[in-house]
Image 1 (cartoon, rainbow, N blue to C red):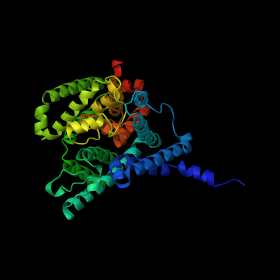
Image 2 (spheres, one colour):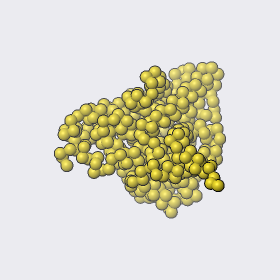
Image 3 (cartoon, rainbow, N blue to C red):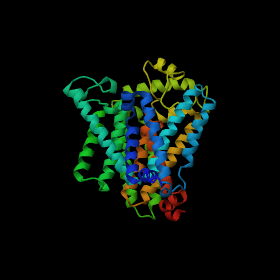
Image 4 (cartoon, rainbow, N blue to C red):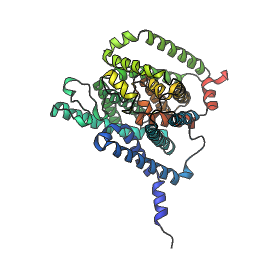
Length: 426
């Protein structure tokens, strides 16, 4: 007599409801790693991540017939991860590199699962649900800590400064990470509103919540990213309204304007820092980068070996001692990956992020559905934030890159991407 349990279990694991629940769990874990580490430690977090990877693999096997496997991963993504894995051969801390590469791959696989198992609008809806809960919980904890108790919640890193106007950290440990997550949330909530994925009151309340958390974070990095995001959003929606025959000219003009803006921003960087009242943060970064530069000449091409979140072993401990404060990263994804993977790794990382952004941007400017702007603008936020933070190299930030890169690559090949963008110029 056939066993009825196996087919039923297979149907359950391959169902859309299971994929939806697993996506929520994956995104929730990716964005709340600090809180999870604070509550259950590194062993608990790793156990959660491993369990999610196993469940994602089982779910994909059960959904094998429903998944389009053609062109699953962008080549640039595979090459970057491959170089990080290869760095174990010359790493100064090989055991750490093996573990940290596994950590990178695990979150990458979770991102791939989300991109394969859910449509873009479903990813946006899942991200919206997760970020509403995390930001709402963060605000509640800040109110309890800063107003009701007037005491910090030390194990979560909450300083209880809400009564004095912030900055606040919420569930994310630092104000800069809170600001980054709140900015991604604001973009997600706007796309939800424009696609009518949630009710109008929910959309308005969510956008207000994200805006409040951006302001309370008091993060200069987030404010700069917000300005760039607003400019990019206006430019993208302008391109979407432009005539297809003339769109390529506007694309060229936009690239030219972006290069000029970067040059002006670099020339006026001191004044910008003063306007943002970010001299203290900039001095911390400058001191860290100066110390990192002392060790870069030892391994300029291949770096010291992949680490992701900084370990306590040399040379990272030397940098911590020299700067007088602990660091979990190099405070810039571009400099951090250069330090860990050398010139080659930095070029691969910039190429991977740049190709994903260009692909997603061309796709968003050519397709009519509003949901296509989400991957492009998320990558804009990640790319800009990466100048002053290393979130793009680990956990939720890395997972966002993988999701957006896979979505962009699967929705539009390079040949198809340039045709609608450049039109007769081809």
